[in-house]
Length: 371
Figure 1: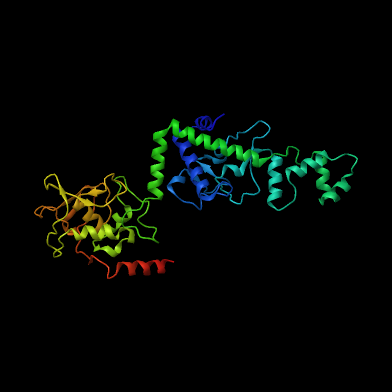
Figure 2 (figure 1 turned 60 degrees about the horizontal axis):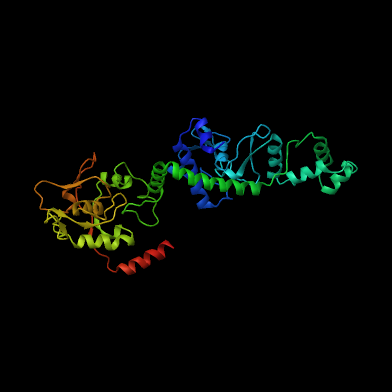
């Protein structure tokens, strides 16, 4: 059986399989393949299919996640080994690491519980007790191994740990991870568009920053709407945010922000601020440099950039000037975002600061404060 077949049998789609595989891939890269991976401590949109609420074990899409995870490393239930066992080395109840589970017997569950409590029994020791010569008394064997007499006696008689076998788990895990790598490669070949889409969704939700993001802050990162607008910015815009202030941006953006406003004829607060920078198509379109995570071209219209750098990042929404404005007006109070509901006009421009007193000194002080 393959992982894709198991997912299909339980009613899950190829997309569900890809999401689970990519979650395991991200965890293994972040934390290493031997660590416990907790979805409760790593909240992200990538792990939205998981549930650990009011459960004794992890669920995925309302199903037991453990057999699904095990299928990713080519482990499936067998008639004599159909119980899911969590390894004693695992300290996370809702662990996503498939190598921290295996299919075993009830006896394996009991033995893992003993090992988790710090007891010295392990499968190899159980096997050695079973294989011990009958010429050696139980009392002698228990004394030699430092175990209670009744425990050795029950193991020898087959009362406890009957189904326990000595298995080289490390070798099995290594082979399982090789199967996972192969599965990852096969999925990329069989479902290239679904994999690409998922990778992009994860990147947007966990890595992308809008230009208003500043170091040390969690906001303005990974929260984007259907048009690529920053939802943190949108909240601020609806509260009337309006500032022309280069100090509001991370140092990485300083020269981009400053260069833009240097090409705007900044006049009075209620006057038009004409764009005096580059144009194209015989002067019918303005061209301003400002890279955007949702635009392939690093250049935008001057009005769009003026809105982004004064009110907030609105992604692919179009920005227009009010009727009666001068050509390519960049005054934030004269700009309108078309298609975004409930965005009030700014009452005033709170701050106009186009330069630091000493940008390098400021950057040095900022780094000292953050460290």
